[in-house]
Image 1 (tube, rainbow, N blue to C red):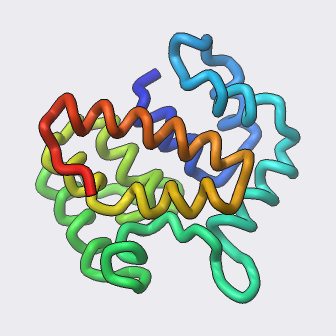
Image 2: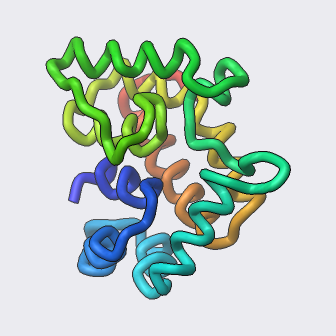
Length: 164
């Protein structure tokens, strides 16, 4: 499985099918620690933790998975519009899992489909702020965030993209 697609699944709302796909991967196809953490988890537990971190928590969402939040301090900002424009320029007019264009899982899915190095640079401008928050708020998703970070550092260095 393409690593971008793997992480797109990991940071999407958990479903039984998604957890099965992750569990069916061999260790060579996926980061081992996140695969082990997610594949053995009951669906309801995965959904509860995802919701707590990324959808709804009082008094505020702990780790919004949206580029516009980290770059502009709000949701559905210019970053979301920019991402949608990137997709259209590549001939893709899609909504992934019903999420806004700047949701992490959508941006990772775009990279899985296109491998667009300039878009990877765009992702590198905000994703580490997100992963730091996740690591500070969840043991389960913290493992996933750390493995995403490690993968992206290698990808960004390999392509001479900018890491911020």
